[in-house]
Image 1 (cartoon, rainbow, N blue to C red):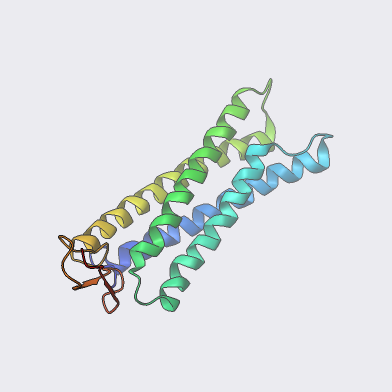
Image 2: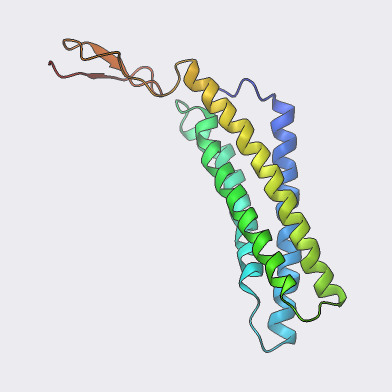
Length: 179
């Protein structure tokens, strides 16, 4: 089954925005991490490193969302996209909040590095919003697929050995045990 309620241009625009924001977060976080690693005696802060990880995970997720349905044609695309959308939303929420708390605790924050870190918080928040919207759209699509009989499955009771489709894989059935 294909995504039906999310029109192709809408989801394509959302995925492009996710990729652009991931690039901005990656560049800004890398700039701040590089400054810490080369200019100070301190290692780069954990929230910065986590946002670097989050941006890289976003690209891995985008590739998986587009590639996996081609290898698993019987699994609805929404079932593949939903976990990636949710984990990315969680990662960006955790990352931008942690960086905002870190910046709040600094004694002073000036210059290009500080502005880059502040912009990193903003683009992390924007990324969280876009991945959350994508997760909501995907969750609605999963519910729609399940309502149409494309997920879940099972029967109404324990019949005497009747075939029950598994839902996600309509051509595959299981034999229920006799009561």
